[in-house]
Length: 76
Image (cartoon, rainbow, N blue to C red; front, side, top):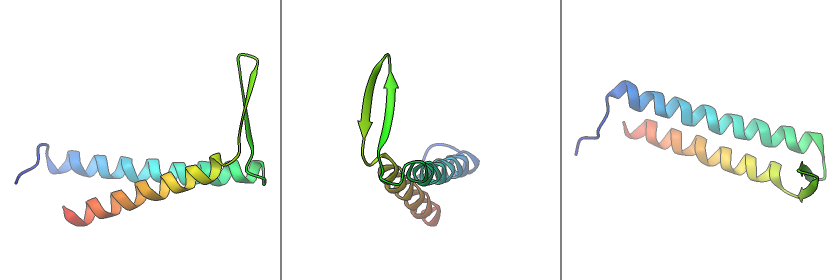
């Protein structure tokens, strides 16, 4: 079954997925480095929102994207 799009378009999507995954991993590590307890506070319109594991979620999300890009690159 053929897939729509040229080979260069698929390769571009794979590289962008890999880049976004690595950026999410880097951002997660950066958030953990900023606050070792894993707590992140976002002030939005005078209201504070506290999140406890944003860095960990970023690392896991990034790892999933990198894994997806790796699997997709092996199929094509």
